[in-house]
Image (cartoon, rainbow, N blue to C red; front, side, top):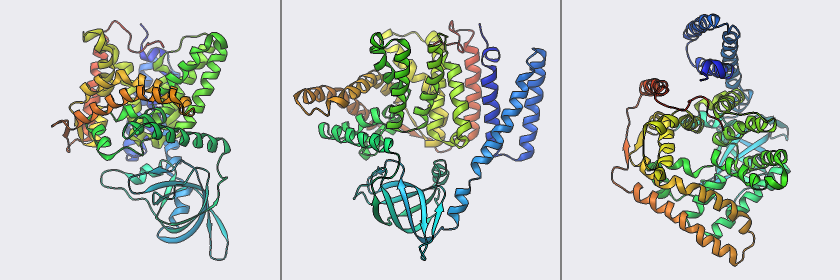
Length: 494
């Protein structure tokens, strides 16, 4: 049986050191040095005995890399350039660099490639991006070049939610509320992304034409990751039932995109099939956006792709660690992103907890797989959810058991609906009626259990100590489970 330090040592030690370096940046420097020295001495002694002298060196280097990479992310000249203009009336031009988000009472527009226009017509470039909060109409679109007149303010945190850090993680350092906006041009941005985002808006429009709310928003959320049009009561019930994770684009979508090409593999050949799969996945990722779950799935697919190309076995755990290494190195600030935390912890639950539960829990095969998959993810994500959202869904395991089996149906059905929606004929109408049935089932289940008394419990006093000791206990459970599980927890082949 292959053990963690033997097979995954390099990637794991690099990830461990990177995490310690990133986290230690937030701590006192003396505590950082003390912890680092202790870890280095322990690992050095441990690996010298086993003749793995290179591992403590990699660990030390990754700690320093994580520390200084986080320092580089924290110090951004964009923040300094924005701070000079806070609480001032400005005239600025810029491109819409992301698809605007329509909320209940406003529209949020992210603008980049900024240039301040001074009173003497002097143009001063402004690094970073700016968030515009404006009215729902007129609607704005990616690639439009705007001239904005208004007061720029520093982002502020709202309650316990660190809204300022949330925006800074995206490179946004200023907010302008309800400015005067004029459109200068519609040809800004990347032409490829303009075409792609225009295509996505057309898909959304087609979905809204064939389905009512909240079914239309549900389908858009599952296949496109769009959540801006959810009715408030349905969004609240998704939170209460612990099913928000279902209505976002995830690794499941990436897998299904790949399976579309596998269907045609007899005609394409293996290498072409894998190459077209990778190309299709990249296009899909650009279409839905680079959210942490999608980015994780994409990066995990890349080493699996090369393993298949060169005829070697790939395993999920190695790909998982590789994805974490790459993403945190690119953007260390994502370690504070809740979506990143939930995505990676849920995946880790499927890799480490699911095999144990599969051996320990005996249930009819009809419900066993779906229940254990849901339970594994929830066990690993529980502390993150209760700590950040201050509530726990008591009905989540049951609701997930009822809904997870139809998610592939909705995803596949949504993908098939996309080309049909452009035909606008009787076939599309008939197909949409059939697709409406599982969509309505999903909505009815969520609303029924969301309105159930005691569907969620408020937990206001959850501390970081609870999170720490929970994961310590879970780690002990995982290692203990190795003695009861027939499957290797760390050698799961894909």
